[in-house]
Image (cartoon, rainbow, N blue to C red; front, side):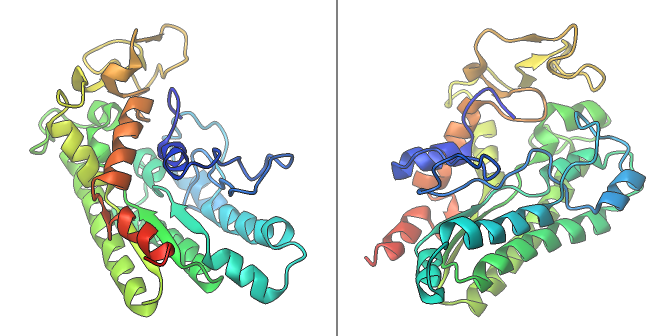
Length: 301
């Protein structure tokens, strides 16, 4: 999804553990954990996606939905992580683990442009899937969870390409899209507050992707980026992005130094951008409560 490492990879480096292998890579060593992410996952059911989503970007078929990841997690706990353990031993294993719920819904918000899906339904389905995932973790005994919000998707070349030139907010991004994402993040934070009340012995942190992204965008030169909106890999034009000629297609090219740009292909960010985002999450207080607080509590400090 980018030219290198993602937030989860920098998280592993910070914790001094190996990169998390994908769950479906059965031959992997899962002693440090597993990654259940699937590129392009959707909150929509198979039938609803097939019927309503016209803009599938790079997905020719129907992407897997998030329910699959929940089922994979349950199977992983049963067949790998807790294999041969008693119920109490398994519970202790889960209580000692850190669960990072990455950004959920970004692909769906990007794909619904021009579709028959209402914003209300999209937000309801997306937040519903996040709730299912987090509740599944909590019900299985998880005590340390980070839930990542969405970045201002209206600032990515894709949404700026699709939106009208006058549809811009104070950041210079697609205003309509960003308003929808802000609503998503606001409601997600309300959900997290409720979970924090319901599970007072757990640490459930919100990773503020929006604020982290906005900080870098507003001060992009301080983060050694040349410009805030142009994609590294694309088909030319002001944004180096064309909906009909995505990165990797004939006629596209890649910039000389991806570390100088925030956006990789107009849809995903560059490794350099993810590195800065991860630093803000893990070291600069862009999680609420902070990641340092979570680690201290986990260590009993």
